[in-house]
Structure formats: C-alpha cells, structure tokens
Length: 493
Image 1 (tube, helix red, strand yellow):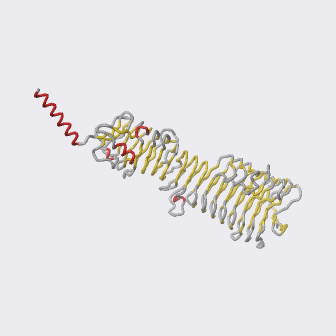
Image 2 (image 1 turned 30 degrees about the horizontal axis):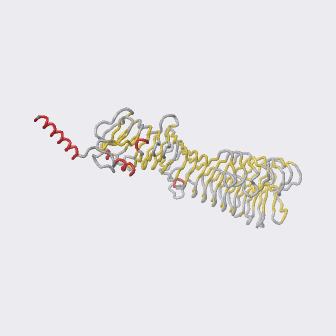
Image 3 (image 1 turned 90 degrees about the vertical axis):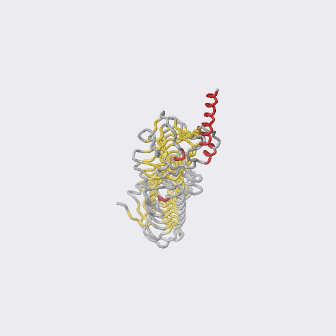
C-alpha cells in the first residue's frame, strides 16, 4: 500500500513531495498526487535529497490538477554539491490537461540506483523534457531511463539522456528507452542527451503522434552513447517532418494509410547502418534512404524511390522489394541475398546505374511489363553476378549512347560482364543460363527504345551482354555487289 502525502512548499518557489534530512528508508513508495493553482514560476520535485542514502522503492509523483506556470518539474532535487543516493525508482506521471511546465527532467546532484520513469499524458511543456540529469557531478549516475509520451505538447526537444552545462560528468549506467504513442513534439527527439554519457543502449519507438523536428537514436552536442542506438517506427500513424537517424532503423507494420499525414507518405531522409523493413506493405515509400544494409522481412511488399551506396539487401522468403532507382557507385559492390541462402531478386522500374569497376551480385528485373527503365552501365567494367531479366520498352543512358556512337560496323560494346543468366520477355525468348549463347539477330531497340530499329543486335555469349552494330543495308548491298564483281572477274580469267 503506497502512502499518499500532501507534500510541502518549503520556499516561495519550491514544492517537494518529501524532504528528508536524515538517512533512512522510504518504505514501499512515496506517492504524491499534486494539484495546485498557485504554481506560477515555481519548481516541483518529488523528493529533496541532500548528502544521504535513502532506500525503499522510491518516489512517485502524479500531477493531476491544473497547475499553471511551473518553471520546472523534477523527480529528485539535490542542491549543488550534494552527494546523496536514492536506491529506488523515480516516477513522474503528468496527467493534467491544462498544466504547463517550463521543463521536465531529473534535476541531479545525486545518484539514483533505480529507474527514472517519466510519462507525459497531457499538458504543455514550453521547454525540454530530459530523462537524465540537468546537473551532475563526477561519479553521480542513474541506473536506467524510461520516457513515455502519450499526449500533450512539448515545445522544446525530448532527450533520453542528460542536458545542461554541468551534466557532462554524470552518467546513465544502463539503457535508455523512449516510447511515443501520441502528443506533439515541436523540437527534436534524441535517444541520448546533449551532455553526459550513457553506458548502455538507447532505443526509440514511435507508433503515433506528431514530430516536427528530427529523430535521432543517439546523442547530440557533447553527449555520448557507448552502446548501440535504434529507432523503430511502428504503424503508419506517426507524422514526422524531419530526418530519422540511427544505428538500426526499423520500419514495422507500415501500410497505406489514406492520410496525407500518414507515415507511408514520409518523404524525409532515413540514415542508418542497418535498415529493417518488417511487414511494410505501403504501395510506395518515397523517403531518401542511406543505409549500408537492408533487411526485407515479415511479408514486406513495397516500393522504394532510390537506393544509393547500399552494400547488402537481405530478402526473407515471402517478402519482395522494387525500386525506382538503384545506384552502385564506382568500385562499389552491392549484394542481393535471400536470408535462407542464395541470390535475392529486386525489380528496378526506373534507373539501374552501375559505375566503373562496380559489381551487382543478385538477380535483377529491369522494368515492369510497361517498360520505362534506364540502364546505365560503364562498359566492360560493370558486372552483374546473377540473372538479368529485361522487359521491353526501356532505354540506355546518354553516356552509353555516346560510347556506342564510335562503334564500327560489326564491332560490339559490352554492357555487362559476368551475367549468369539472361531472360528476355519479348520475342519469344526463354531464359538462357550461363554458357548458353543467344543466337540469331535480336533487335536491341525492342528493349532499349532510344536505339535505332534494326541497327543493333543484342548478343549474349553465356557471360557477357553486348550490343553489336549491324551494317547499314546500303553497306551490305555494296559489299554483295563487290563480291559478285570479284566472282565475275575470276570466271572471265
């Protein structure tokens, strides 16, 4: 059974739920259900801690009434130079719809062995919300931080870690977890802090609400996260205007929302070492994505606008991915793999660009049955280690057309090396495996419509895909006449 206390106003500008001047044990939990209309310019702390160690389950503060004009709300407050320790947890729950706060954080100048847990359900914060210290001295620490935003308005930024000029020496020894299901954040969201060190990992999970700033799983400024950081966007109900950054970024259960504010309409920038698309069924996703590797799983079936400099794409059975543009830069390698083993397959409906000495390892389908793709390959130094499927109605890049313009009749230009298999969807050709040559004349203009009809033959020798310049009909006729004349001279002689 928790004790409900009335708290006390110890000075003209400070409220405390409890203020201990001796060592002791708080018992199960000190709970303070606070409501007061005379709070303008004041500070509230659930506990006032000096140079003491206080045991028990910790402190819980719930603000339930309209409290206008708080300058700040803290879990535990210790005056500058304090060395106290609270062994339990600290919980702040903000439920009042018409309450206003300058800032919300763990004040500092002490250590907390347990967890800081802050929940914003309603009200307005004109400044920042931080789970870590606003002030700390060397050696002072917090065990773990959990932040929940379910409603309300934060006009500043949201930090899982510490802020303030003197928080650099304080640390969070465990992990930081932020969960946002609703409410509005005007500023940025950071899993870490602007100062101090987080020894564990940080995680940010967003399933609703509105964020006008950026989302970053890590820290900013002088803050540090020694573990990994992650950002997870669940469902299509969150609206994010800024960028999304994390070591691992996961997009989960994102479908067509039918709303201009749905996350499926997100067109910002996603930057990650690892990007996970899990059960993403939105018909298209127009974000600018920068990731080293991408995992496509959980029945994902979606279309991305552009991938550049990605090193690996892993596709789980039952999941699929199509792209408007796939770019592999000069000297780079991109690998498409099935998570169960073997090569993965991606459809590119717009631009496939392979730079000089680049390698794309995987199965590629260029274009849909409606065509519309562009192939830009830097000649014999571009490699496709997998199966290539060509649909009719594509085109070649301007750079490739320039290279073709210097060909002499009968000579060839290699588009791609190391092609394991070729499938042509027009002209009745079936799939050709490595080592099986394409025979006869195949009009390349069927697949690349910016080539002159009948002028180039598409050739495949079981390894290289090339274009051969066919002699002009007039040239061929003149050659036949010359041969006939030579034969006639031989007969007369």
